[in-house]
Image (cartoon, rainbow, N blue to C red; front, side):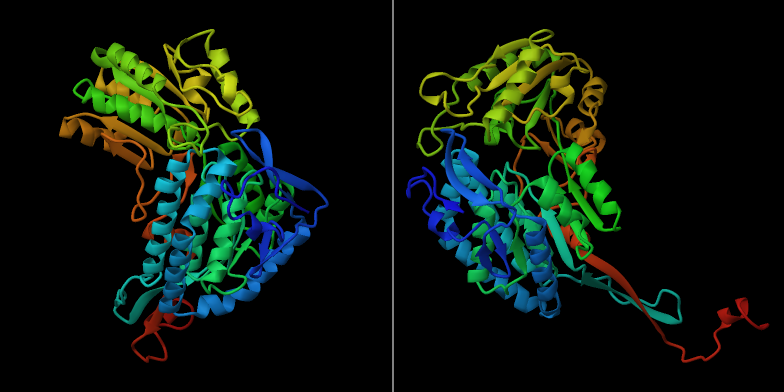
Length: 511
């Protein structure tokens, strides 16, 4: 089934590329065989834009088989050959940048300026980074650690990787899963979220058009219960990488453990935003609003809990609310839009439920409602600031995943740092201070995979992304990601040519 829906060519210029189906297996599009279809909905309008057939377990089996067949040749390619193919890949995505940006904004509802200036350029940079990193997969240098032997380390690809990506940054998350895996010589089957498969499919096609061999990158678009669980549990899949909620991550881990797979989990977050009393208040306010509202707050590293030392607290609340009220909601494709809708009406209602329940114990300073008028058919929700919530309340402890910032006061540095660490999560955090020693203490004591100082949100290809605690384990991006996607092999050579070694006496004979 292929139904182009109501998207105009201007909003979805790449729709004809996807006419043959929403599965990409062994270098070509195919239709899913589950006998069920799914419609991608533009969350800004509530209208369907692309209907496709969902993958069955048979489609997953076909994708894994294609990846398994492609593995020996791709793993055996030289680092230079893989690197050159990935550089061509970056060039193809760069040529199609506007197509990618529009498809991303259409399926996610994110402002076009975010897709154009963040998602697509960041993805191209990621490809270029891993194209170079493919040539730097060294192990530890040779050494004679026992005296009688020479040892060295080999890094070897694991095999077929089965990855599951979320709906909030579908293009970037596809890149984060695919690129380190294939740079290291693995092949991959990626299951994107069924809500947002469009750019993952276009990404795989771009790789094939760039000359990356058929079967190295495969996409299956199906439900988590059917396609996702079958992929994670597949006996020919050697590793699972999952990004999503902590609750689903636990289920993924349970399935993967049954076949003793390598496992990489990037899960939920509830990032603290810690403002000390010597901070630049204007910088902190701007950082809080930008950090809380990026991608309509649907970001696992978004600023969600602002802890502000009491001398600055009232001014911070007042200025943050005023700046939030200036943020412009609108059509993601309109030039003046700052904030788009949430991914779906169901997600908007979930966010609204958190805010409505909070009214019983906290103050909604601004926002807390869906707009009416020309935006009411979309999944929009106004930027929301909540003050006075208890530390143990759900809006402080649970991941809301929407444009909601909760602000609480603290008195001493010890208290602020303790509050920052007081959730199950540990993905990201920021601290705001002009004092070097204060800031350095925050970087040491906050338990999170990334701690920003006087900023919140920026990421770069050269540095890792991943969490502590219930936010999971393992790293995306950077050379550290190769720790996830390679096997470490110790090779040891005898240097003595002695037939009977001294240590043999522990098994037979006397000295």
